Image (cartoon, rainbow, N blue to C red):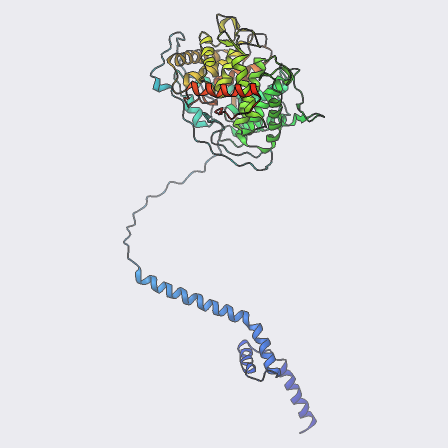
Length: 558
């Protein structure tokens, strides 16, 4: 053999070694190599090839098994199939569905075209069954987690007590303003809407309201007015895009006014000298948290509420500047403090000592603020227009069956809604008739519309309500400039001005009137009819505990 032949053989062998084998050729080499001695190179290469081929082999086996099992199951099902006869009906040609436009705020509510004469002195109440409270949907608890300021939780029943629930949804509002001696109507709701548009038009760019009254108090009252109508960010209201941002900005502003001083005491910027505004702002913050579960206003509402609890006087009342050492027991001041406590407890805010604070407050109302059939301004005085304040406080705190409430309702029996103090009652009640009416409207509604109401309380509420529905629409001041909603549509606006020493406070005047016109759905009347003796026993036990310095558990029914 020549040298060239040798070279040619070697090259072919080299080419053969580097030749790329097909998949099945590699499988064949692997199977042959596995039969060789374990110390041979062929066996070791076969083991290495087996490791490389394990993944594709397993995948192939899995696919084969999957299809095999599927085939078996399909054959088994085929044996059990039943033939079902189906009749196909002819379908008429569908009408094309039009795209739904974005929801617009409804047209302004217009009062009935014909003027109806209402005889206030001789109302026709109709059967008692027609004046039962409006039903409210059940409430559900919502867990609270940290969230952005504009985050809200939908609550079926925004304000709720154990024996008092209110639902400020569009459906509930419609049911409560359907007309009748005990309810509101289109005229009252038209006034409310004018007020809501008025407040929107007069809100400052920072979210507050000014105008004749303390800005902090004005803003809190405006927030309470919107919340009473179920307006807040994310609410089901058809006006949500217009009023939601208004409320959001106002609540943000209120939150930013709350801070702590060097001693750690909760304070508010811009508060008035006697700190009435502190109480009203706390009320608004508690109700805002209760309706929205907004965690950002939880802490400020809690801290403010705690200041009211710790600022209670030694006798169970409250005095100017929330002074815990004073025994002056100012009924007007107490009224806002107790409304704030009620809203805070409904919202799930429970500062330490809250229940004891409520028990002491009830004792103070019964033993120090009540005299000669009504509630006085301060301890030792005679009854005034603030009789309505003490009466409502006891009703809202679960003591509506007490004798003091019954006597107070009798004391207010001759009252009628008025912007003139001389026309409120034959007895001189004070110089702020609308302030008294704000409370009296709620008192008479609670007593006259609850289940088991006495005939005299029913009649007193209906007479008051018929007069109120006639008076307020006639006194609202329509502003000439309409307010545009978010889509550019015009809406009427209007406000109220009291005809007394406080008539320079248009925001306060307007909000107090509007809150009365929303009494039908703001808080539903109490529905539980506990015996007065049960409540009296609870109060007596609380009083004994306070006297002895002991703490007892008494159901306050909130």
